[in-house]
Amino acid sequence: MYWLVGLITLSLAGTVGMGFYLSIPSATPRTTPRRWLKGAVGANLALFVLAEAGLLLGGVHNALAAQTQAAAAPAPVGLGFGLALIGIGLPTEVATIAAAIAVAPIGSAALAVIAEKPEAFGRSLVYLGLAEGIAIYGLVVTILLLGKLG
Figure 1 (cartoon, rainbow, N blue to C red):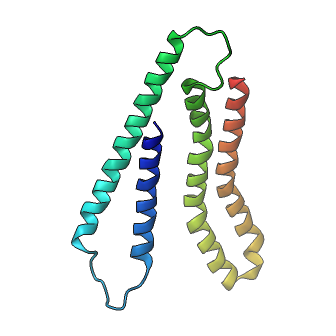
Figure 2 (figure 1 turned 30 degrees about the vertical axis):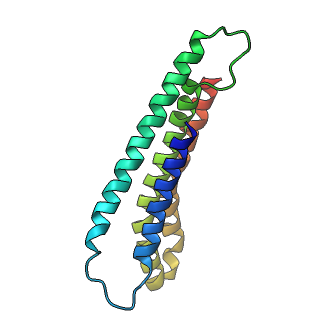
Figure 3 (figure 1 turned 60 degrees about the vertical axis):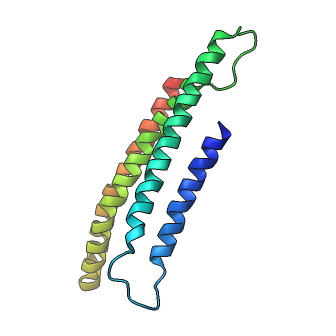
């Protein structure tokens, strides 16, 4: 099971390393990425998906095997509880990404308006606050779901 976690870690490290490689300017201008990059990204993605599937199936198999054993001592944290915690964290994640997508154009437009009319600062701040409120709603949903879990 630990080798799958190591495989996923290597896959993520490869993706980050490729991102750094592509962000570094080279001495010669690159109009298109090298041909092998497309295959390398595809192989990295396939490796990541297969390792995730193996980790999930291995965890389910271990959880089912643990249920067949006698439950004399309380189990620490099972697979179901871990998946519930991941599901509870998803509203905050999605709402934060949505807030970032909303704040980006509003922030740039607010800066443009403030540069022309400084008295519009308060109004633009309200619009930014409304867009950022999306993330707070996701956090509230996560807190409510945590209350239901216990």
